[in-house]
Length: 224
Ligand code: MN
Image 1 (spheres, rainbow, N blue to C red):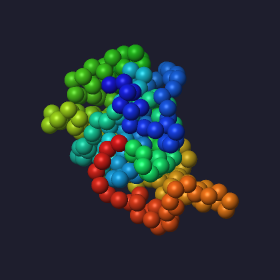
Image 2: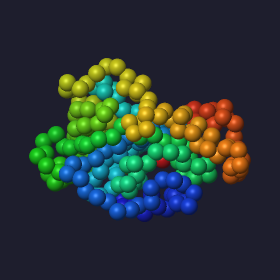
Image 3: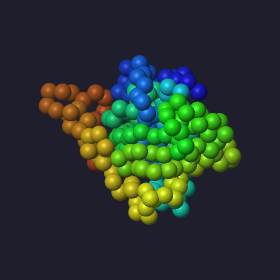
């Protein structure tokens, strides 16, 4: 897919999101899951492959319970340096709303011995619409599968495979960033406060804090 679509959707003078930049290869492939309060709250699963982050919007979020299969809508590739993004995408921009790094870590194909072999097997799975992956994150661990539904070009299902990391509890209750330890609300409130400091005129319309909370709690489905 490349990063053309990613770039065409964004105004880098306005959004604090990552401009595609230099990439540096670690010995293992990385993954990140963003929690994103856009028009509709969703989670974004991003997997490093071919030098970019292959991305899926997961409206209901991942689960460690193998009986839940979660819809994952494939979206445009994101640059590798997007893995570090946490903050607020301003109103009027694509995907406006706050974002936290809900989970991150390394991942690999279950039968691969090294990064190279992992990448080959994962890419093969991506082409075939059936990706087997082992996550080694802070919240998510163990084997998962991402399987194309065949319904359309973009719909996949994400689910946990049965192993010792499978649990029936709701992992989404752990709602803090693995980087800043902040919740989505704390990230958006921090921006609100800094914009409204005395002597710092807020740009554009200012919203009340309760409006900001209402906006981030809206429930409509739009990936991005
Ligand atoms: Mn998103």
